[in-house]
Length: 121
Image (cartoon, rainbow, N blue to C red):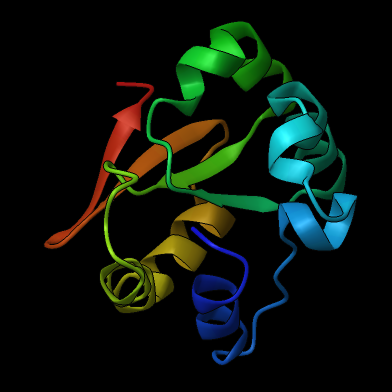
């Protein structure tokens, strides 16, 4: 999702945003294991925005349940920055509502026409 475009767009709506880089430093995308940030997201009750809808496969169902994660993912990681920003910002109110009101864990896809629950079904 990039270091600046999406995070700055979400910040512009008044939300606190932590990125891999702001939490773990430069090069974090290369050396921080998914289980590390997932556990930190659990401990801090962070909502996860990712460009990788297959993240549940990496984490596994057991970790998803254990960490009670709230994940919102773009279904394709090859979207241009402007399209990523548009999808997230246009769904931001629903992302916040679901993250705050729906039982965790859950994984939602962020599509051009809205959000869809991908897991659990």
